[in-house]
Length: 355
Ligand code: AMP
Ligand code: MG
Image (tube, rainbow, N blue to C red; front, side, top):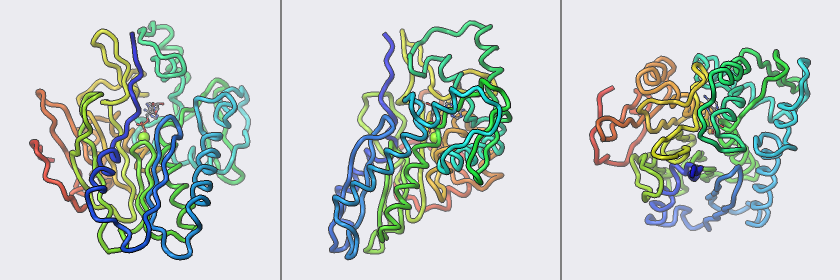
């Protein structure tokens, strides 16, 4: 029996627990907490309800409406999403899409170029072939099917423009999967909404991708945790705790979302350059960036690149990354120079590697 294990809730399962131990963070104002489900995972919003902010019910409605809109645009799981319609289309002319979808595609292509195709939004047919699509399966694809599918994948065959918003396929059978960036985009959209409502202090999270606006009103930062990569079922444990203000944190990991059968584990993240699930020892990649969309896409890309190439690129590009690798039965971390400049509150119990 295979099973699709639960979604990654990388940071917040732990961070919420830690937050709960600390004094109420809103310095006298009520702390509004909103929670729900979206994109196959959970979301949570913590916002300090300062004077002038709309009532809780209005905020909740606004949040739900934004999430519903983004799901209707970017979901790979619905036949009626804008993305599904684009995928089903067999035209090689410009296809009009919402401004949101166009912006996400433009950002995805930019990360594809900067990572040499480690991140690739056209990976959809490979996701399906390797059993991570709608019909989960662990059957090895036969070499011919793999070759045919690989020919359909490659970000160079996708063009995206924002004005007017449209996408174009160079191959009629090109299909997109934006799951590796959509949660981050949705977090940013919620952050923009809350800021528009006048909120100045908040923390937004979807499935472990999160973004903070300023610190807490008492001048202290939000504290967020990067979960230690453990096997599914284990209690979440913080590997690193960071002080986050006006920044986003995203994590990609192999430890919570794999297909498993008879001891065979298969990563849900594929290396589009070779057409196969990633098979190295990198257990998780976390990125701190200005936007959650950027952090989300980069975290996925780094998981494909692996520790060595990932760290080298992060240094070249100035990205703040924390990579956790399995080595000889232990977990070992690597951080980039930009990550080392962040305020880190934890004292990791396990060994740190250089670099
Ligand atoms: P994330 O959890 O953000 O790392 O996103 C992982 C999801 O993105 C997978 O479940 C696939 O749907 C999709 N995906 C897998 N491999 C890639 C890749 N190399 N580039 C972009 N998206 C990918
Ligand atoms: Mg991602």
